[in-house]
Amino acid sequence: MPAFLPRSAKILIVFALVGPLVGLAVFSLGMGVFAVIDGHVDGMWLSPFFILYGLFFAHFVGLPWALVAGLCASVIASRMTDRRLWIGAMSGVVSFVSAALIKTVQIPLAPAYAGGAGGDTFTSGIAAVMLLVHVIAATASWLIARRFA
Image (cartoon, rainbow, N blue to C red; front, side, top):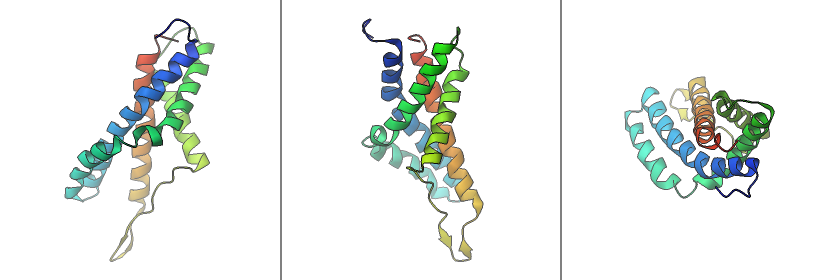
């Protein structure tokens, strides 16, 4: 990275470039695995579908949350002397909680089945996948960005 950029800008750039793509990979894999665990064996085809079409939308959907995580990591790193791995994971938790509180990205409702609405496993499963998306994407971004911190 150019030397004239401040440390926080370098961290934000790494998070903005890397975070949404890692998040897409985690989301794609997570949704496929969750669908299979939930009893929909054909759900394994969700992963390649999300990867293929998600490449066009990854930065559109993930960029705001990558910037929130990057800003959080930058602030934490500025207050600490060492660059521990937990900084990335913590910034991912902050971006997940921010997304949940702002409700700009809502977790879809469980589909209705013949016996009534689906159970709580759908909502909690999607929430778990989204938490993993934020934490793993922020941690991977931090692994790259921490040399600039």
